[in-house]
Amino acid sequence: MKFIYGGYRVEEGLEGTQYLVFEIKIKRSKSEYLARLLNCKFDVILSELFERGCRKLGKLVAFSSGTPSKWIDNKSEGEVECWIQVTPILVDKLHEILSNDYQARFDIKVHCEVEWYDMPDDIRNLKLPKSKHTFEQVCSFRPDGSERDYILFTTDELKGLIEELKHFEFIRIGIPVCRERAQLLEGAVKQIENAMRNFKEGKFREALLDTRNALTNNLMELKEENEKRRWVLREEIRGEFLRKSPSDMREVYEDVLNRVEDTLRNQLRIINDCFIHKDSDRLRHSPMREDVQNLILIVATVIDYLSRRILS
Image 1 (cartoon, one colour):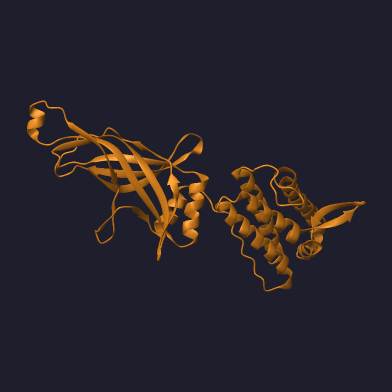
Image 2 (image 1 turned 90 degrees about the vertical axis):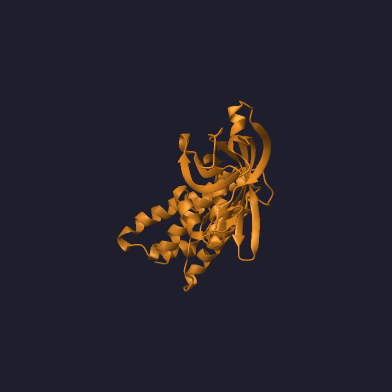
């Protein structure tokens, strides 16, 4: 049997679960008069393809739909589907490939059980079909018609796929650094970009440390208040923010800044009190993926807000 990539679609299940579905056409071998696929399972490998080679990123969990197939003769073809659950890790990997301007490669091996008849007389004489277990690679075709043993998503095709998956990238923050006042925010941005990179690679402890560094080294400072030391927004950032605010709304924006400061202070407390020891880089408790993502996004959103106000 031959398995040929026939396109993809995105399906949505209960509670918003999404699946990437590869449609795979089945053609019988020339030596088979009549054949069908009884059952199959898939091994799917995701890789990134670049000019100088290919790098394997990992194995994806997949299951099949459409078996047993109909009987296939020389005038017809069957179809089976490969369903892959869309997880945050898969989306992160696809974004990573796209951000590097690479192409996404899916290698799909089909482990299958097939039964067939060699000739019409076998059917007329009520013989049982032959059967075997085998494996085949799903192939696709290049624009020039030549065959390849994998499925390829170009940069534009990958961008379209990600848009269909309805997932969003982390906020990307671009801050001009032409003014002296921008330097503190520039440092915070670099730390958050490092945090995002570590998060995508599954390095959650490092991502939390980068986020904490953005808070303590760039956005906030320790200050004595009522004989107690606490983290507050840096005076330079506060002063520049208020200078850019309408004079008749100064009190309003002072209140806004106090609330922003509380938000940052709370994120620092979560990191220090729940996940990482305050005075070291050792973990207290292992964070879940969603914990790290939420902390990074909140701090990144605050940086984005401050940068737009201060550098407008």
